[in-house]
Each structure stands twice: as structure tokens, then as C-alpha cells.
Image (cartoon, rainbow, N blue to C red; front, side, top):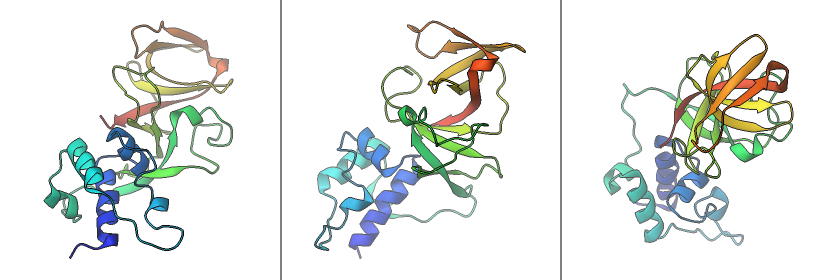
Length: 209
């Protein structure tokens, strides 16, 4: 039987399977970002709101899932266990209060997104905004970042400066005094930053694309 709660649970599970927050799923499906938010599922008078066929059609087309897969929320026992990791918009990451001095998630204002269990490793997610990270990362993509992995040459990294600038780059070279970063976008020149100007640097482990 299809119920109000089962439909919305299926949407939540769909977003989780594909590495999106519900608002991120809506954006990528070219819907208003708040269309499938939890706050929109019941009106102020208590009336249940159902997703339209247009909403279901667009999110299924985006994820390439069938209606049967959509409603089947069961998971095979051999699939990796998922955990909930903090999610923040990349544009917000430069604001104070969201990270500690080592680049670990802190403070309030984080949403969450599902990701395979990293075995105790401290990970978090950032949602890309704008086109500055093209061609690798597009607006609405989710990147999973390790707060404990030590980045190596050639790794894709997120860097935050002491001036609260946040950028996604490729670590090209690191010395005792400087960090050389190459851009993901060919129109942006390399950056060479003094070590003293870098608040933290974290390795990008995965991206939803």
C-alpha cells in the first residue's frame, strides 16, 4: 500500500542512495530546492502534502531508477553500511563557527548526507555552488572530504585560508614553507600560498557526479 509516509521515505532513501541531501536532489532535478524538504510535507493546518507526478518523474529521470527501485528501500546485507556525515554548502564554509582549527566539522548549521562507513575516519560533505570548479565539479555536486587523511601530491583537496577563503584545488607541491595549488578550472592560474596563510587542507575522497 502506498502511504504518505512511504512515498516521502522513498524520496529520502533515493537521495541517500545517490549521495544527495533532499534539497540537493531537488536542485539537480531542476526543481525548486525546497520542493521536497521535510518542512513542505505537511501544511501549517496539518494537511498532508503529496509529491506530484512531475516531481517523481524528474527525480527518477535524474537518478535513472525505476519506480520499483524507488519504492524498494531494502538493502542487501553485503552492501556497505552507511553513516550520516555533516553537509554544508561550500559557499558557507568560509564563515566562522563551522570548523575547528584542524578542519574538523564543528558548531551548528550542518545538514547531513549518507555515505559508506569510513571505518571511524572523520569525514564531512560540502555541496558545490557556482561553476568555478568546472569541469570536474558542477553546481549541486556533493564532495566528501576527509578531515584526517593526509593529502599527497596530485590529490584533489579543499583548502581554507586564514582569511576564510575556501577553494577546491589539486595539490601540486608542498614544501616546509609553501603550498602550490593548481586549479580544476583551466582559466584559473595556479596559487602558491605561504604555509602560514593556510588554516587547513583536507583531501577530497569522493564526489557525486
